[in-house]
Amino acid sequence: MEFTTDKLIAKLNANRVEILKKIDTDPLLTKRTYGDLTIANASKQLFTPVEEHQLYAKGIVYNKNTWQIISLPFLKMYNLHEKKEILATIEVLKETQDIYFNLSEKADGTLIQRFVYNNRVYLATRGIIEDESNTPDQAKFFTMARQCDRKLSYLDEGQNQTLLFELVGPEN
Image (cartoon, rainbow, N blue to C red; front, side):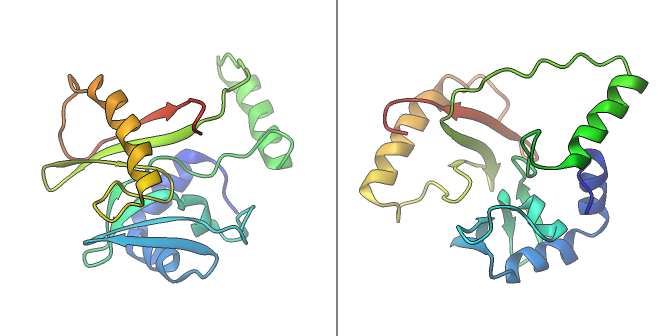
């Protein structure tokens, strides 16, 4: 299985429809549909991906009718101790490139992805898109996220970009 981001993105670009169909039919991935958008994420049964297409399912949003990728927030990222291939890649990079590594502690919150589809700004987590069908708790959460998003209003709201921010607070 490939773990290098640039190679995984190249594979996704070359085999988009095939990979999205695998994601869409994988029973170990959770999919939710909102209009013509589908968001996919690992289910509780899938802690560690066992097939390469599962590496993309970390909140990927796609249009199932056209098999177009609408938002790709992240690929699966492993902790240093999880995969020996990751440590080997880091060692090669350190030896062959002028790269500085700073591995610091991260405050855990909820990753929010912001993307534009059909001239509308959407917010999503890895498994839920902001929508009228959200539960009251989800709606409250997305209200907090929208307050943060207003601070990003100066950014271009064009298609083909996903902006990410971490919502950290007592509620999450």
